[in-house]
Amino acid sequence: MNHTIDFSGLLIDTNSRTITNQQGNRIALRPQVLSVLCLLVENLGTPITKEHIIDVCWDGELSSPHALANVIYNLRNVFARLRTPHIQIITVTKFGYALSIKEGELV
Image (cartoon, rainbow, N blue to C red; front, side, top):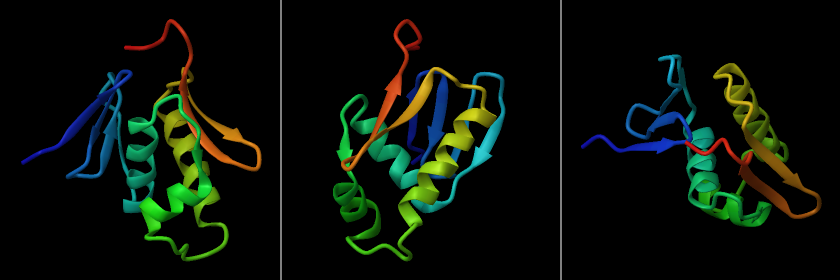
């Protein structure tokens, strides 16, 4: 069964690990990137602690100290490549991250 998430003009396919914009541009996502993206989408607008992201997406143990920061960097690049400036990952200093959609842009 194919599981897709329609999110603000993007289609996230969790089986094929891809994200596609309305113009048909598709980007393949690594498993950890997809996992973090899905967690952020599920908690849209709500800050999530780094610890919770690590617990859910890495079973509590990062492969390197910079793994989470690298995944967030990669996700920001994915949104830029798909030309979705209305979608942003906000860094909440000394806490974690939140996914945000600029007002008036929710699709």
